[in-house]
Amino acid sequence: MENTNLLIFTSIIMGTFARIFMIRIDYRQYPSYPQSFVSHLILGFVAACLGSVVIPAFVSQDYSAVTFLALATSQFKDIRNMERQSLENLEDTELVMRGMAYIEDISKRFEARNYVAFITALFVCGISIVISNFFTLYLQIALSVVGGFCIILFLNKLMKADTIIDIAEVKEATINFKGPLMCVDDVVIMNIGHNVSKEILIEKAVAIMLYPNDVNSVATLANIGQRQAILHNLATQLGIRKDVDEPDFTPLARREPETGNIAIVVLAMNNNIDDMISATKKVPVLESSRRKPKKTS
Amino acid sequence: MPSSDIIVAVITTNKKKILFSGPPVFYAKTREEMEKTALLLSKTTMAMIHDLENECLVIVKH
Image (cartoon, rainbow over the protein chains, first blue to last red):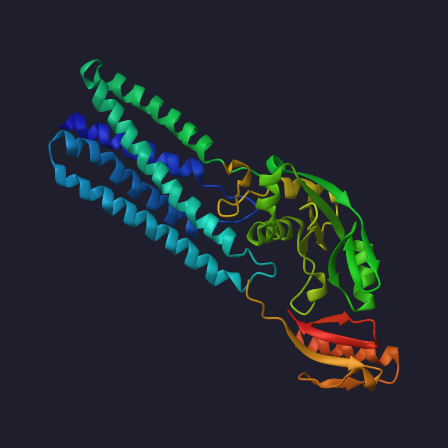
Protein backbone atom coordinates (compact mmCIF):
# COMPACT_ATOMS: atom_id res chain seq x y z
CA MET A 1 0.00 0.00 0.00
CA GLU A 2 2.80 2.36 0.91
CA ASN A 3 4.46 1.51 -2.35
CA THR A 4 1.29 2.39 -4.26
CA ASN A 5 1.10 5.74 -2.48
CA LEU A 6 4.67 6.47 -3.46
CA LEU A 7 3.90 5.63 -7.08
CA ILE A 8 0.80 7.82 -7.05
CA PHE A 9 2.85 10.63 -5.54
CA THR A 10 5.49 10.28 -8.28
CA SER A 11 2.76 10.37 -10.96
CA ILE A 12 1.25 13.51 -9.47
CA ILE A 13 4.65 15.22 -9.49
CA MET A 14 5.28 14.20 -13.10
CA GLY A 15 1.78 15.26 -14.21
CA THR A 16 2.17 18.65 -12.52
CA PHE A 17 5.63 19.00 -14.04
CA ALA A 18 4.07 18.35 -17.48
CA ARG A 19 1.75 21.34 -16.91
CA ILE A 20 4.59 23.56 -15.65
CA PHE A 21 6.65 22.59 -18.68
CA MET A 22 3.86 23.85 -20.94
CA ILE A 23 3.21 27.17 -19.23
CA ARG A 24 4.78 29.85 -21.33
CA ILE A 25 5.10 33.43 -20.20
CA ASP A 26 6.20 35.34 -23.26
CA TYR A 27 5.21 38.35 -25.32
CA ARG A 28 1.57 37.28 -25.27
CA GLN A 29 1.53 37.73 -21.50
CA TYR A 30 -0.95 34.94 -21.30
CA PRO A 31 -1.42 33.40 -18.77
CA SER A 32 -0.70 36.68 -17.05
CA TYR A 33 1.79 36.30 -14.25
CA PRO A 34 1.23 35.57 -11.36
CA GLN A 35 -2.56 35.12 -10.87
CA SER A 36 -3.34 33.01 -13.93
CA PHE A 37 -0.01 31.25 -13.55
CA VAL A 38 -0.95 30.00 -10.09
CA SER A 39 -4.49 29.03 -11.05
CA HIS A 40 -3.26 27.02 -14.05
CA LEU A 41 -0.62 25.38 -11.92
CA ILE A 42 -3.25 24.27 -9.43
CA LEU A 43 -5.57 23.05 -12.19
CA GLY A 44 -2.65 21.07 -13.63
CA PHE A 45 -2.05 19.56 -10.21
CA VAL A 46 -5.73 18.56 -9.97
CA ALA A 47 -5.55 16.98 -13.44
CA ALA A 48 -2.42 15.06 -12.40
CA CYS A 49 -4.15 13.85 -9.22
CA LEU A 50 -7.10 12.56 -11.25
CA GLY A 51 -4.79 10.82 -13.73
CA SER A 52 -2.64 9.17 -11.08
CA VAL A 53 -5.44 7.40 -9.19
CA VAL A 54 -7.20 5.80 -12.17
CA ILE A 55 -4.95 2.74 -12.63
CA PRO A 56 -4.47 1.94 -8.91
CA ALA A 57 -8.28 2.09 -8.58
CA PHE A 58 -8.70 -0.36 -11.44
CA VAL A 59 -6.02 -2.64 -10.02
CA SER A 60 -7.88 -2.78 -6.72
CA GLN A 61 -10.99 -3.66 -8.76
CA ASP A 62 -12.76 -0.46 -7.90
CA TYR A 63 -14.55 -0.01 -11.22
CA SER A 64 -16.54 2.96 -10.03
CA ALA A 65 -13.27 4.83 -10.63
CA VAL A 66 -14.46 5.22 -14.23
CA THR A 67 -16.53 8.13 -12.96
CA PHE A 68 -13.22 9.86 -12.29
CA LEU A 69 -12.65 10.02 -16.03
CA ALA A 70 -16.02 11.70 -16.53
CA LEU A 71 -15.09 14.13 -13.78
CA ALA A 72 -11.78 14.85 -15.49
CA THR A 73 -13.35 15.60 -18.86
CA SER A 74 -15.95 17.92 -17.34
CA GLN A 75 -13.21 19.63 -15.31
CA PHE A 76 -11.15 20.24 -18.47
CA LYS A 77 -14.19 21.48 -20.36
CA ASP A 78 -14.71 24.02 -17.58
CA ILE A 79 -11.13 25.20 -18.02
CA ARG A 80 -11.81 25.81 -21.70
CA ASN A 81 -14.99 27.75 -20.87
CA MET A 82 -13.17 29.76 -18.22
CA GLU A 83 -10.42 30.75 -20.65
CA ARG A 84 -12.88 31.60 -23.39
CA GLN A 85 -15.00 33.74 -21.12
CA SER A 86 -12.02 35.57 -19.66
CA LEU A 87 -10.54 36.36 -23.08
CA GLU A 88 -13.91 37.41 -24.47
CA ASN A 89 -14.32 39.84 -21.59
CA LEU A 90 -10.93 41.34 -22.36
CA GLU A 91 -11.64 41.64 -26.07
CA ASP A 92 -13.22 45.10 -25.85
CA THR A 93 -10.10 46.50 -24.23
CA GLU A 94 -7.85 45.45 -27.11
CA LEU A 95 -7.02 48.03 -29.77
CA VAL A 96 -6.44 45.19 -32.20
CA MET A 97 -8.74 42.34 -31.27
CA ARG A 98 -7.66 38.74 -30.95
CA GLY A 99 -10.80 37.57 -32.76
CA MET A 100 -13.08 34.71 -31.76
CA ALA A 101 -11.08 32.11 -33.67
CA TYR A 102 -7.86 32.91 -31.81
CA ILE A 103 -9.69 32.92 -28.46
CA GLU A 104 -11.19 29.53 -29.23
CA ASP A 105 -7.78 28.23 -30.23
CA ILE A 106 -6.16 29.46 -27.00
CA SER A 107 -8.97 27.97 -24.88
CA LYS A 108 -8.68 24.60 -26.62
CA ARG A 109 -4.95 24.62 -26.08
CA PHE A 110 -5.38 25.24 -22.36
CA GLU A 111 -7.84 22.37 -22.17
CA ALA A 112 -5.47 20.09 -24.07
CA ARG A 113 -2.57 20.96 -21.77
CA ASN A 114 -4.57 19.71 -18.82
CA TYR A 115 -5.20 16.48 -20.69
CA VAL A 116 -1.45 16.18 -21.11
CA ALA A 117 -0.96 16.55 -17.34
CA PHE A 118 -3.66 13.91 -16.85
CA ILE A 119 -2.21 11.47 -19.40
CA THR A 120 1.34 11.93 -18.08
CA ALA A 121 0.25 11.06 -14.55
CA LEU A 122 -1.79 8.09 -15.85
CA PHE A 123 1.13 6.86 -17.96
CA VAL A 124 3.74 7.21 -15.19
CA CYS A 125 1.55 5.33 -12.73
CA GLY A 126 0.74 2.73 -15.40
CA ILE A 127 4.40 2.05 -16.20
CA SER A 128 5.41 1.72 -12.58
CA ILE A 129 2.60 -0.77 -11.89
CA VAL A 130 3.34 -2.82 -15.01
CA ILE A 131 7.04 -3.12 -14.18
CA SER A 132 6.50 -3.59 -10.45
CA ASN A 133 7.12 -7.34 -10.63
CA PHE A 134 10.50 -6.99 -12.34
CA PHE A 135 12.31 -4.18 -10.57
CA THR A 136 12.92 -2.81 -7.12
CA LEU A 137 10.80 0.13 -5.95
CA TYR A 138 13.41 2.81 -6.60
CA LEU A 139 14.21 1.46 -10.04
CA GLN A 140 10.48 1.38 -10.79
CA ILE A 141 10.20 5.05 -9.88
CA ALA A 142 13.29 5.98 -11.84
CA LEU A 143 12.09 4.16 -14.96
CA SER A 144 8.58 5.59 -14.75
CA VAL A 145 10.00 9.11 -14.36
CA VAL A 146 12.11 8.60 -17.49
CA GLY A 147 9.01 7.27 -19.25
CA GLY A 148 7.11 10.34 -18.00
CA PHE A 149 9.68 12.70 -19.51
CA CYS A 150 9.46 10.82 -22.82
CA ILE A 151 5.64 11.08 -22.91
CA ILE A 152 5.82 14.82 -22.05
CA LEU A 153 8.23 15.45 -24.92
CA PHE A 154 6.19 13.25 -27.28
CA LEU A 155 2.87 14.94 -26.44
CA ASN A 156 4.46 18.36 -26.74
CA LYS A 157 5.75 17.51 -30.18
CA LEU A 158 2.34 16.12 -31.12
CA MET A 159 0.57 19.27 -29.96
CA LYS A 160 3.03 21.71 -31.47
CA ALA A 161 1.05 23.97 -33.78
CA ASP A 162 2.26 24.86 -37.26
CA THR A 163 3.25 28.46 -37.75
CA ILE A 164 2.82 30.76 -40.74
CA ILE A 165 6.34 29.93 -41.95
CA ASP A 166 5.15 26.33 -42.52
CA ILE A 167 2.33 27.33 -44.84
CA ALA A 168 3.42 30.55 -46.55
CA GLU A 169 6.33 32.65 -47.68
CA VAL A 170 6.53 36.12 -46.13
CA LYS A 171 8.03 38.97 -48.16
CA GLU A 172 8.26 42.72 -47.93
CA ALA A 173 5.77 44.66 -50.04
CA THR A 174 5.32 48.30 -51.00
CA ILE A 175 2.53 50.66 -50.05
CA ASN A 176 1.16 52.99 -52.69
CA PHE A 177 -1.92 55.13 -53.12
CA LYS A 178 -4.24 55.16 -56.12
CA GLY A 179 -6.23 58.30 -55.32
CA PRO A 180 -7.66 57.67 -51.86
CA LEU A 181 -7.18 53.89 -52.13
CA MET A 182 -4.27 52.49 -50.17
CA CYS A 183 -2.78 49.51 -51.98
CA VAL A 184 -0.10 46.98 -51.13
CA ASP A 185 1.49 45.98 -54.43
CA ASP A 186 -1.78 45.63 -56.38
CA VAL A 187 -4.12 44.67 -53.55
CA VAL A 188 -6.53 47.40 -52.47
CA ILE A 189 -6.52 47.66 -48.71
CA MET A 190 -8.70 50.60 -47.69
CA ASN A 191 -10.04 53.99 -48.74
CA ILE A 192 -8.18 56.63 -46.75
CA GLY A 193 -9.84 60.01 -47.15
CA HIS A 194 -7.69 62.04 -44.77
CA ASN A 195 -4.57 63.45 -46.42
CA VAL A 196 -2.48 63.71 -43.25
CA SER A 197 -3.17 60.05 -42.49
CA LYS A 198 -2.07 59.18 -46.02
CA GLU A 199 1.25 60.96 -45.54
CA ILE A 200 1.87 59.23 -42.21
CA LEU A 201 1.04 55.86 -43.74
CA ILE A 202 3.35 56.41 -46.71
CA GLU A 203 6.16 57.54 -44.44
CA LYS A 204 5.89 55.11 -41.53
CA ALA A 205 3.70 52.10 -42.29
CA VAL A 206 5.23 48.81 -43.34
CA ALA A 207 3.67 46.14 -45.51
CA ILE A 208 4.21 42.48 -46.18
CA MET A 209 2.75 39.96 -48.54
CA LEU A 210 2.06 36.32 -47.63
CA TYR A 211 2.45 33.89 -50.53
CA PRO A 212 0.67 30.60 -49.61
CA ASN A 213 2.65 27.42 -50.39
CA ASP A 214 -0.25 25.36 -51.75
CA VAL A 215 -4.03 25.11 -52.12
CA ASN A 216 -4.43 24.12 -48.47
CA SER A 217 -2.53 27.21 -47.34
CA VAL A 218 -4.62 29.44 -49.61
CA ALA A 219 -7.79 28.14 -47.94
CA THR A 220 -6.31 28.43 -44.45
CA LEU A 221 -5.12 32.00 -44.94
CA ALA A 222 -8.49 33.00 -46.41
CA ASN A 223 -9.98 32.51 -42.95
CA ILE A 224 -10.74 35.85 -41.31
CA GLY A 225 -9.92 34.51 -37.85
CA GLN A 226 -6.44 33.47 -38.97
CA ARG A 227 -5.78 36.90 -40.46
CA GLN A 228 -7.02 38.61 -37.30
CA ALA A 229 -4.69 36.43 -35.22
CA ILE A 230 -1.74 37.55 -37.39
CA LEU A 231 -2.73 41.21 -36.96
CA HIS A 232 -3.15 40.85 -33.21
CA ASN A 233 0.25 39.21 -32.81
CA LEU A 234 1.91 41.87 -34.97
CA ALA A 235 0.28 44.65 -32.95
CA THR A 236 1.35 42.99 -29.70
CA GLN A 237 4.93 42.48 -30.73
CA LEU A 238 5.66 45.59 -32.77
CA GLY A 239 3.74 47.98 -30.51
CA ILE A 240 0.54 49.47 -31.84
CA ARG A 241 0.61 53.14 -32.77
CA LYS A 242 -3.06 53.94 -33.23
CA ASP A 243 -5.49 55.13 -30.59
CA VAL A 244 -9.25 54.67 -30.36
CA ASP A 245 -9.94 57.81 -32.43
CA GLU A 246 -7.53 56.86 -35.23
CA PRO A 247 -9.19 54.07 -37.20
CA ASP A 248 -7.04 55.04 -40.22
CA PHE A 249 -4.06 53.35 -38.57
CA THR A 250 -5.73 50.03 -37.81
CA PRO A 251 -3.59 47.14 -39.07
CA LEU A 252 -5.33 45.47 -41.99
CA ALA A 253 -5.04 42.26 -43.97
CA ARG A 254 -6.67 41.87 -47.36
CA ARG A 255 -6.72 38.98 -49.77
CA GLU A 256 -5.93 39.02 -53.45
CA PRO A 257 -8.81 36.94 -54.86
CA GLU A 258 -6.90 35.68 -57.93
CA THR A 259 -3.96 34.14 -56.13
CA GLY A 260 -5.00 33.97 -52.48
CA ASN A 261 -2.00 36.08 -51.43
CA ILE A 262 -2.54 38.11 -48.27
CA ALA A 263 -1.43 41.73 -48.08
CA ILE A 264 -0.86 43.14 -44.60
CA VAL A 265 -0.27 46.76 -43.57
CA VAL A 266 0.78 47.71 -40.08
CA LEU A 267 1.62 51.09 -38.61
CA ALA A 268 3.48 50.19 -35.46
CA MET A 269 5.90 51.77 -33.00
CA ASN A 270 8.63 49.53 -34.37
CA ASN A 271 8.56 49.83 -38.13
CA ASN A 272 11.46 47.50 -38.79
CA ILE A 273 10.46 45.25 -41.67
CA ASP A 274 12.68 42.35 -40.54
CA ASP A 275 11.03 42.32 -37.12
CA MET A 276 7.62 42.36 -38.77
CA ILE A 277 8.49 39.46 -41.06
CA SER A 278 9.91 37.35 -38.23
CA ALA A 279 6.91 38.13 -35.99
CA THR A 280 4.53 37.07 -38.79
CA LYS A 281 6.39 33.82 -39.39
CA LYS A 282 5.90 32.80 -35.76
CA VAL A 283 2.11 33.30 -35.67
CA PRO A 284 0.44 29.93 -34.99
CA VAL A 285 -1.87 28.43 -37.60
CA LEU A 286 -5.22 28.21 -35.85
CA GLU A 287 -6.80 24.79 -35.55
CA SER A 288 -10.19 26.18 -36.54
CA SER A 289 -8.91 27.90 -39.69
CA ARG A 290 -6.95 24.96 -41.01
CA ARG A 291 -8.42 23.73 -44.29
CA LYS A 292 -7.29 20.82 -46.44
CA PRO A 293 -9.14 20.95 -49.77
CA LYS A 294 -6.26 18.96 -51.33
CA LYS A 295 -7.35 15.89 -49.38
CA THR A 296 -10.77 15.86 -51.06
CA SER A 297 -11.06 12.61 -53.00
CA MET B 1 -19.46 37.96 -40.93
CA PRO B 2 -22.01 40.49 -39.65
CA SER B 3 -21.09 44.05 -40.59
CA SER B 4 -21.84 46.93 -38.29
CA ASP B 5 -20.44 49.66 -40.52
CA ILE B 6 -22.52 52.85 -40.40
CA ILE B 7 -22.23 56.03 -42.47
CA VAL B 8 -22.20 58.70 -39.81
CA ALA B 9 -22.13 61.79 -42.04
CA VAL B 10 -21.52 63.06 -45.55
CA ILE B 11 -19.55 66.22 -46.31
CA THR B 12 -19.69 67.75 -49.76
CA THR B 13 -18.70 70.82 -51.72
CA ASN B 14 -21.37 70.09 -54.32
CA LYS B 15 -24.94 69.93 -53.08
CA LYS B 16 -26.13 68.39 -56.35
CA LYS B 17 -24.24 65.18 -55.62
CA ILE B 18 -26.58 64.26 -52.81
CA LEU B 19 -30.19 63.40 -53.52
CA PHE B 20 -31.51 61.87 -50.30
CA SER B 21 -29.55 61.05 -47.24
CA GLY B 22 -30.17 59.18 -44.03
CA PRO B 23 -27.04 60.47 -42.32
CA PRO B 24 -26.58 64.23 -41.94
CA VAL B 25 -24.99 66.12 -44.82
CA PHE B 26 -22.54 68.97 -44.20
CA TYR B 27 -21.95 71.51 -46.92
CA ALA B 28 -18.50 73.09 -47.29
CA LYS B 29 -17.51 75.87 -49.68
CA THR B 30 -13.98 74.68 -50.37
CA ARG B 31 -12.02 71.41 -50.38
CA GLU B 32 -10.04 72.63 -47.33
CA GLU B 33 -13.19 73.37 -45.38
CA MET B 34 -14.60 69.99 -46.35
CA GLU B 35 -11.46 68.21 -45.11
CA LYS B 36 -11.41 70.14 -41.87
CA THR B 37 -15.08 69.42 -41.16
CA ALA B 38 -14.51 65.76 -42.00
CA LEU B 39 -11.54 65.57 -39.63
CA LEU B 40 -13.45 67.21 -36.79
CA LEU B 41 -16.42 64.92 -37.33
CA SER B 42 -14.24 61.84 -37.52
CA LYS B 43 -12.47 62.72 -34.28
CA THR B 44 -15.80 63.41 -32.59
CA THR B 45 -17.42 60.18 -33.70
CA MET B 46 -14.21 58.08 -33.68
CA ALA B 47 -15.00 57.12 -37.25
CA MET B 48 -13.02 57.08 -40.47
CA ILE B 49 -12.96 59.46 -43.43
CA HIS B 50 -13.39 57.95 -46.89
CA ASP B 51 -13.01 59.90 -50.12
CA LEU B 52 -15.55 59.16 -52.85
CA GLU B 53 -13.62 61.35 -55.33
CA ASN B 54 -16.83 63.07 -56.40
CA GLU B 55 -16.53 66.12 -54.16
CA CYS B 56 -17.90 64.08 -51.27
CA LEU B 57 -16.32 62.65 -48.16
CA VAL B 58 -18.17 60.12 -46.03
CA ILE B 59 -17.51 59.40 -42.39
CA VAL B 60 -17.93 55.70 -41.67
CA LYS B 61 -17.88 54.05 -38.30
CA HIS B 62 -16.37 50.58 -38.77
